[in-house]
Length: 198
Image 1: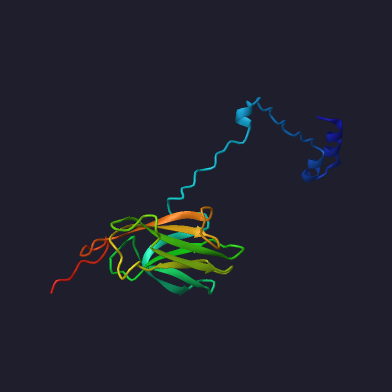
Image 2 (image 1 turned 120 degrees about the vertical axis):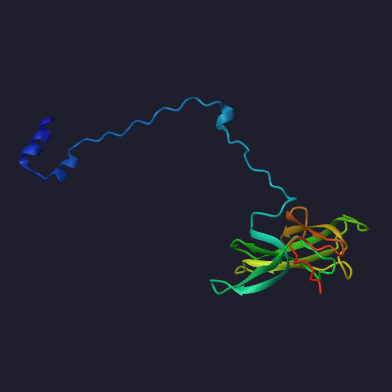
């Protein structure tokens, strides 16, 4: 035992006072191996973003539905929630709603939806049939787009809705794509209640 430590013990100091007298050595950091330059450099491991799928990023949730309701949220704000969520609609549906919630944001922006007839007989797939936009202020965390049929009824087929973020729709503002189907007249969409017989 070191003479200095023995002297402290003989002085009758409490054990806590001894902690300053005991030397503590730091553990040596192990040397790293030589890493090849290809491993050392930052790799482009950014996941691919699919613009042809439902949008992500700013959206917490987004879905097509037959309607919406406003509810009072826990922060006393108005929250828009979907009513009868579905992606299959009847031809006589007066409109198709896309209801969404977004993450908090630090500036206002617009959500824009442009509807194209992706696979609809008699309609050009590159010509939009409906469009809507919603302005989101700083306090807004939910909203909806309302798409009306191009004529008095929706034609049966598959539709796609490009979702854009910004003040106008451009190639750069595209953030994702939603899809819905309009069933043939007389066929009930999936999840619809069966017809009653009298």
